[in-house]
Length: 201
Image (cartoon, rainbow, N blue to C red; front, side):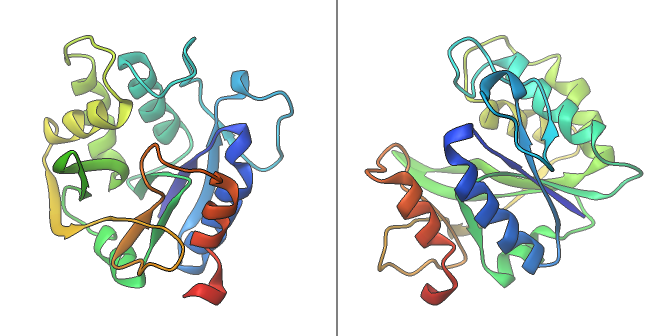
């Protein structure tokens, strides 16, 4: 089972910390980047051309390129996870994502409680079908995470949990899973590293 951690250049320290956490949970964890968006390419990462001119993770082409990257860098029918670099999983959450059934995702409270595309898992066979389904989605500038959740939903289904992903700040409980507050980071690197700091577990 392989976890792919998407990272921008500025977030690399957080991605490395996330990678260490996922390896500790038993995953083969790889950092995935779009080399067009980096001035200095790091070693030991995988590439996928998912960036766009606005440097945002939006649009159908971005979504499909991420699926292409997941498929190209795996084999057989292994379990695959796609995750943002600022996602911390508990042991329980990691085990829940390790499922033999259809895709899995959690929920977050952002304006409303909704299925969250910052971290999801599926078998490679379903991701291949999701890539086909993604071609049929309405063309839009939606977040790639939403588009890929829709593609997974349309290609075998998506199971969710009722627990809400914590939008974590220093001093708070991480709960089942945690991520940095959406669009509210004052010191993203420091907060991201604190999220994975073993002294705070």
